[in-house]
Image 1 (cartoon, one colour):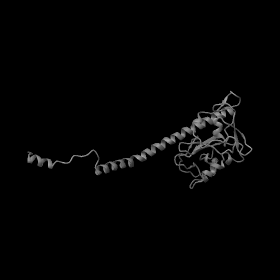
Image 2 (cartoon, helix red, strand yellow):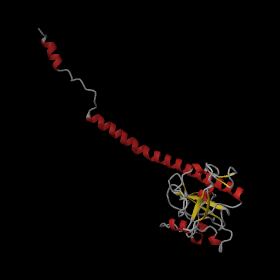
Image 3 (cartoon, helix red, strand yellow):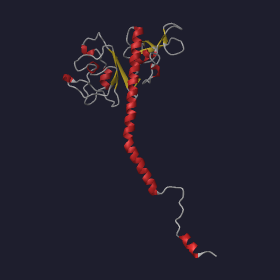
Image 4 (tube, one colour):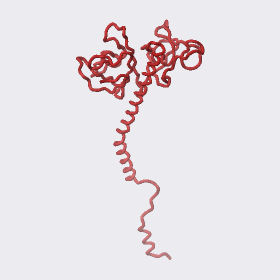
Length: 240
């Protein structure tokens, strides 16, 4: 026969919990996670952006060195339209349908050989490991191809033209001007972009440019030598 006191004691015991969370506990956990994300996300985004900026600088430096190596061997700078391909070691000739077409030397492996099993001309400085916006079509119309920066945007290259009719056309590229037409940016030419506040060119060989993290082109100087706030563009020349 059961003890009445034992029966009464058992009736007041709390029910045992199952293995799950209560609704209040779930809400508390969700609140804590939300707060951590709110506090930490800007820092995470900033760190990732800085890593990409660093990668852009590395890419610009790789291309800069490759162009210098190309010039040392060919005694000329890569052309404006076919720079990535020339650094790759591809060779081109005029295409009757317009543009240029790739010349195949018939030898396996990267780089173009002037003679079978002869010297390999390219790729220079590891540019074959860089990403490009597209590929040249053999025997077809040549569309502009660029190396890409860490943000997935084209990296611009322009050689200095000593024979240009005017000083302001020494670094001119109409495609660059068209792409850079943005509100608040007075960019009439690369020649203007490539000059410091005293009006002298940063360099008279070639310039390489990435828009940086903000995806906009910035200037060091504007009309009338007005100073534009510093830009985050990444280039192969040092601004004053």
